[in-house]
Image (cartoon, rainbow, N blue to C red; front, side, top):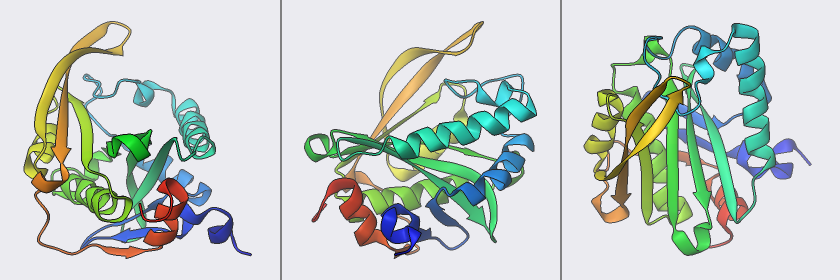
Amino acid sequence: MDLDHVWPLFGLRLTTPRLELRPLRDDDLPGLVDAALSGVHDPARMPFGVPWTDAAPTTLARSLAQYHWKLRAGVTRDGWGVSFTVLQQGTPIGVQELHARHFAARRTVESGSWLALGSQGRGLGTEMRAALLLFAFDHLGAEWAESSAVAWNAPSLRVSAKLGYEVNGVSRAQTRADEVVDEVRVRLQREDFARPTWSLTTEGGAAAAEFLVGAGG
């Protein structure tokens, strides 16, 4: 028996015209640490609810590994989070996450992501989120997708709008000890998804869906 049978998510691959998304393996961690340390955002402004990019390099590397190991270990049918390594030409450039709580009843997924600065501004953020939505709607049977971004993060909110999300409220979020900002929640119904013109190639989708949500999605 190989590792893909022990942990079926490891057999999942989502391929777009420019990217490959695959559930994070330990071998991806060094490349992801390098991508994160190359810069993810302007250091003067924090777009994340947990300011993980403020950490010193060694702490960031270890915390990133611990976070993704914890996420993997916590997967159950009732609640799960899957971190996808985003690769361009075989090189890790960021992470796209997919989460769900009480999916059988709620049929709702949530997403979050980060992308190295050198890969931003070329539509890759839209491409990787679209891949995730295609998998969630067409393979898992999701009916709704939710996400959020701090109010000043216009690029993230543009990605959401481009894919069909609508604003679903504003709340206050603490991003650093001395920083509180507005956070914009967005929501997308499956029927309103602005599907891309390209097709997603999926490998291992059926086994991954059965593992996460059961037979038949």
